[in-house]
Image 1: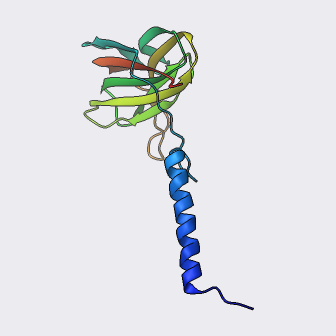
Image 2 (image 1 turned 90 degrees about the horizontal axis):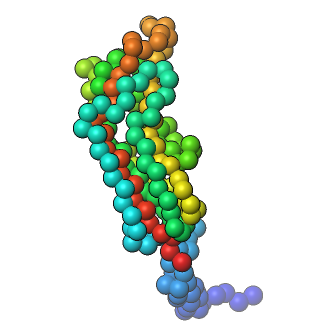
Image 3 (image 1 turned 180 degrees about the vertical axis):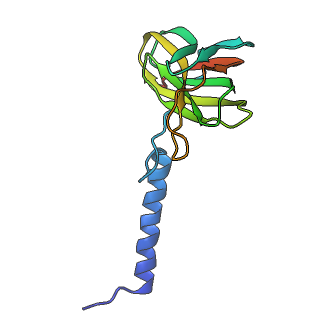
Length: 175
């Protein structure tokens, strides 16, 4: 039985490395265990609205803080930003914001913390949204946070969300 010489082994490694390099150049999205990537074109539209006052006063029932109607001429990616302030969230309350496209999307939680004033900006993307009319909205509600020391109780009356700003970037899907 013949052993593989060091020269032949290094040559084999060099050939495999060259093939991988060529594939990486020819197929830049090719990868194992990588997240998927989607690249849209230049924004074809940017929808913006602001409310310098209270956008919504919410309790246990979900209320719409802001919404944007839009019509897409072609399949597009949407990038949504929502800037907000939470006012009057108590220690045992949790504010919840939901960013939705046509009623579907994530809900994010914000635990209360005296004095209960929080602000920030959320971002969420929706990929490959079909052409046609759509609604992007942000809704809010307040839930009690039960603990071993405090039984679950309904939030006081309400917490305010505001000031608010909603921005939607529309990027056509690259062909």
